[in-house]
Image (tube, rainbow over all chains, first blue to last red):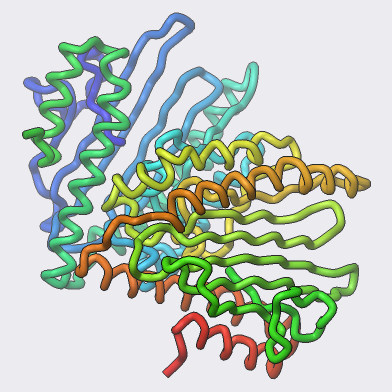
Length: 238
Length: 238
């Protein structure tokens, strides 16, 4: 789900982006458990307006099996947006109920999801990709918020109110329980987890970037951006 | 999700139930890949009416990793019901995109889900159990169908029309692609799958039967029924 900053819109590049790359892929490690962060904002003019996509993906390394942090807002009009927030699982949940309990049950992550669910403007968003549907957690905040005609200010209020509160709530859970996780990962489990992480990143690029970027920014720019993201993700093509 | 036939309501026991047990747990194997089938109908009087739960669970054995078949209808009033239909996955989908492709993508199972989704009376049903949410496939038909006051005949029409068609469609996919699957399972993968199957069955009993049966039929009857189901499921308590 992470997307690169818009190669054709330098104005929307993030403040922390190095001058050589319009997207942010910070190798700096704020904590030993963090592998990398990808932060991006994408702006694309379309015939009847613009699409703005803001993403933050914080990836933990293989010293822990705690979930990654994923945040994405896709705004296709001034009155509606798709929201995606999750603590992205790194283990097979049906095989590991204790993992569900630890990261999603005990943390009460579902309470955050319910705050958005209860908004009259929100309805569940179902990804067209069966893989994306399978990769997210059972408490993923996955909604379309549609405020209808003339609802610009209502959307602004929701973003600054409910949505900001939920993002902070989930980030707090992630910082406390995931980034700060100190449990050890068994060697055999680590091998499966590393493969799983790589599969999820690789499929994300395929269903998200490869499928969408070329028609937004043309094949050349998209090709270069995707190649760099692949390197950062450690999923380079043979 | 499978539930036993109602120990207190012999009239609603299924026709194929042996006299010694009010629920059906057929050891007869219609095909070498089928491990067992659990078919049940549960009827429970409540202060303002009755709850009727009809379930069919067809479990494949460990010679294949193809999905199990799950069907459940929970009718709490003459005008509404919860529908659950799925080809229950037996592998970690995020680690195995080819499994998603084979059983859910290529079979176009999502088209069946969409038939129910498009009904104006249907809205997505989200299980309160995070485990149940995690165990089902990305094309699971998981909806509440609510036809509102006076909607008895509308519900009947939906059940005999759209719903019957979707059940037949999914069963046809399952019979062709899952029950008829001839691919071999790798020894290492089989071990994980057997453990996964057992975890899913064990958790299903916990969140579904242990949590609900005692307050419907009392602790004694429920205890005996659950003990038998545990035996059939191969998840007896220590």
